[in-house]
Length: 250
Image (cartoon, rainbow, N blue to C red; front, top):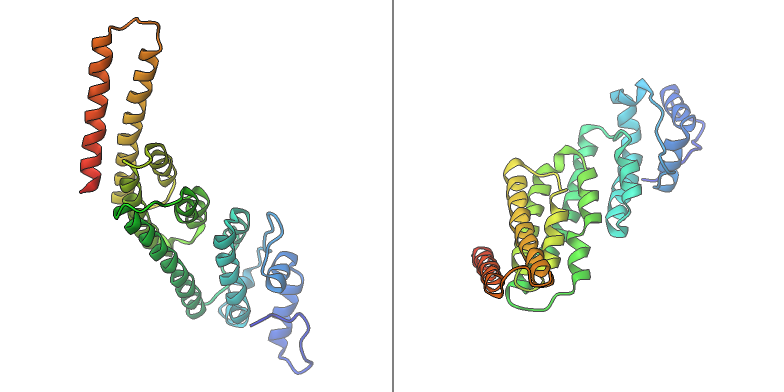
């Protein structure tokens, strides 16, 4: 339902007061009328914004623009819009808030299914463009997920577990891409167990990367280490990576 600043003459004194508060709040008025936010825009800190009667009045208008702004931020990878929306109160009563969150969750579940589809293709050995993976597991998506309210914590954790699967399938295809994804995933706010798993995976990949870099340094270091030691080091890294692949394939 679109909010109209002007209203008919036959409205209650209470509604007139509510509309007066809205019209005197430039950031809120702009959001209701455009569905967007001016940079760093903040709603006025009015006590009436916590009043159940005011929330009942504004909820039908606020819900529509709020949901559309969140979905647009995800579609456009617009972290500025998402952060500005997240920095302001959600002016919805309980019933409308549930409806709004359900709509957002339905959208996010669709995104998760697309991520699962990519994961399955990787598992089957199909080639997947890194750009496609970034669409659903990139740092901008992760940042936007983090801006969502605490009610989405369970979804964030479930989504992170799907990204973990993708990273594991990526290890023996594109190690650096897997490491980059693991690095980004550490930023996602999840439950304790998923956070631990993401950190552990990152550390395993980072250790392998550091060992590989060390070998490159030794092989180009002017012969300070014997050829035999270099070969043994390389063999050790190869065995380490093979173990990672076997672990992730399970």
